[in-house]
Image (cartoon, rainbow, N blue to C red; front, top):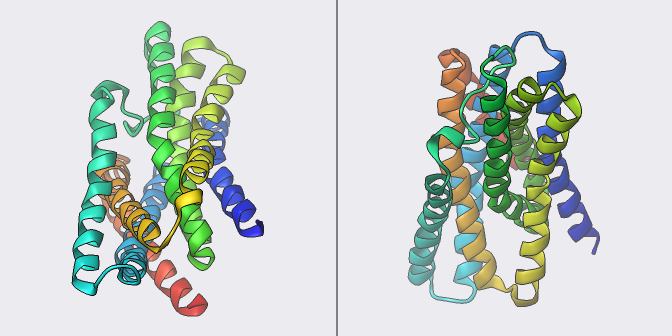
Length: 262
């Protein structure tokens, strides 16, 4: 029971970091592009390394306990790319101009009505997108507590610009900090909601096979998010080398944490 509460708490923290982005948008006069570029690259490094080195290996090991080794390898690969397909499909269903990962700056300005509408749709898009992320975070924290904290930090950093993406247009479109913060806050709650629903649906049936498949799907989701969203967004902030330094730093931190905690 304690593990479940711990996993849910970490998922809640990751989701609520959208509120941090919202506060940054309110009080910063100018976007700190270097910080965002570094943090997005760092998040990508953590998620890519832990997915390819740790999570996929755990998934195959878990699957091999219920099916033979070669079949376990095939199932792991299929689930891994299935996770990529799932998150790609979600992105495809979201109109491009409402994409939650379109770069927003604190100093952006446009027509108020257009900004307000864009902000509301962005909040909805982020909520839909964060749902599988919440399940991924929760499963990781529940099954592998020693790697949960770096993953949660990576996803939290990834969610900060999403909070900015929601709050900037809503605040500038309505002039209301309260509305901007509420919508940003609610979009982040999709992560713990995904964790809760995933827990209720999957835990009664959880076994080595299902865990292995879910873990491989989680790896695919994290790798896709890193290459499709985090790294391109980091480069759009105009700090290419800093994003790469962040990427390498994230990998180093994740590698050291696995060695020290393993």
